[in-house]
Length: 150
Image 1: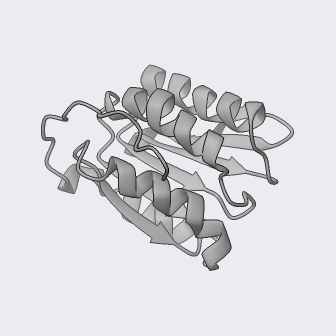
Image 2: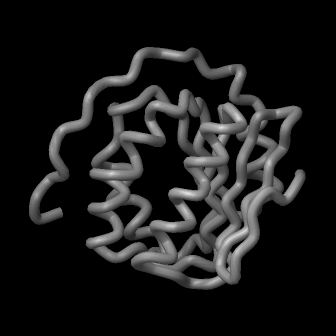
Image 3: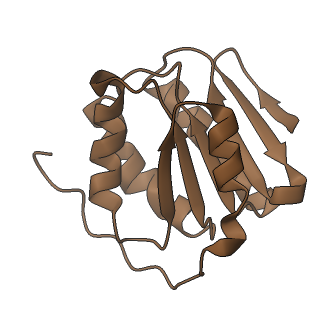
């Protein structure tokens, strides 16, 4: 893996052989830092024609509702156009850290042809994500408005 981006709160790693990008959050963030980091990830993914994405969120806490809404309305439609076939999420495994991720994924389920899996370690996530070629590429659908009250 090659480091392509580094900030005080995020490292972005690239595996060129597997067209894989990993966003490794180094400590909890929200608001503008979360949005800047996710936007940087999109820019690299577009440039590098990524097909597998790992969100290493072990050091990221619950994603608050305004950030969830931004991800759903602004970020995820751009993400869906990338052609990513596998999304791996590395998480702490406790219910508190999973809440925001689960809500986002619940609202985006079926909106893009994307296999998603959750892992306790980055190594396990990489092992699964690098097999993105096993996933068929299907046309994506349009996005409805963010569900209110969720």
